[in-house]
Image 1 (cartoon, rainbow, N blue to C red):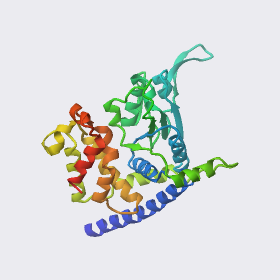
Image 2 (cartoon, helix red, strand yellow):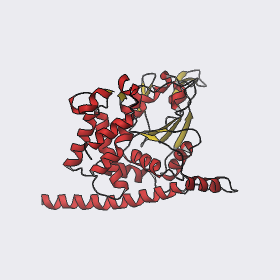
Image 3 (cartoon, one colour):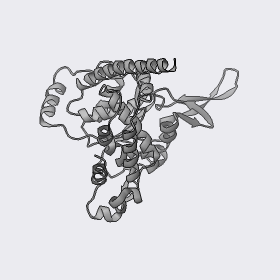
Image 4 (cartoon, rainbow, N blue to C red):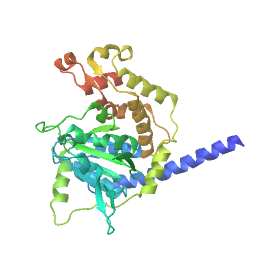
Amino acid sequence: MAADSVENLEDVIVRSAEQVAGQMRAAKQAIATVIFGQDRVVENTLVTILSGGHALLIGVPGLAKTKLVETLGTTLGLDAKRIQFTPDLMPSDILGAEVLDESVAGKRSFRFISGPVFAQLLMADEINRASPRTQSALLQAMQEQHITVAGARHDLPKPFHVLATQNPLEQEGTYPLPEAQLDRFLMEIDVDYPDRDAERRILFETTGAQETIAKAALNVETLLTAQRLVRRLPVGDSVVEAILTLVRSARPGPDAGDASKLIAWGPGPRASQSLMLAVRARALLDGRLAPSIDDVLDLAEPILKHRMALTFSARAEGRTVSDVIAQLKSRIG
């Protein structure tokens, strides 16, 4: 009887995975009608959302980062809101505030007016332009899915995802994100320039009389079901060992081997958790029932890069975090 129930459970997971994979393919195709030449960015963003996490998109202005987030909101059926981060932005501009109301009878009471953080998909545009105090207003929301204002707890809608953008060139008037906040992002996704063919298509599609608008491919219930399914996918021992080996070798100490002298500080256990979820989500997105070591190697850089720092001597030698991660990956692959 127990064996039958296990087989039935496996059948349910297989059927659910096939259905979800088809729905996610439809979502990718819907996004591809609006966003061109950024397939890897779209895939990693979808992996992040399927994993239930947040993403930091880094790229120069004009690479459709904002448009990607708007398109995702439409395609996935999520309530999306946008905050433009500026140096004078206050925490209450994000979270909301208590206001004093007076009734007809003259009785006074406080009422909470919710801020834009009460969304299912929150775009934090140019997040590094706001002060550290304002940036930290998102910390509790990103980790605990609720906020506290004037001692009262307010739960955020489900799902809740933050997709933040950051321009790498404009350093004047910016505040680097603290390590604790960077660690809240499941992935750091680099948005590069499109290739020539993609840019040619952008020219024709975006400068004509009519612009293509993305269509909804999923709804909230379907996405929540997919996120629950990600956590039920089996992970083989070899994949688990590859995750542990990779993350532990990215920290200074004996596990890093020759790279130890290059690393000032490395990723904590949250990186292992993120990698474990992301490889499952990527397998599901590809229509596979279990992740492989290739998934670990492909997702290593976007998940580890923002959780590491190099020593002064390593930077003086011209080494980069990407170089070091590639060196660590070569020991597994």
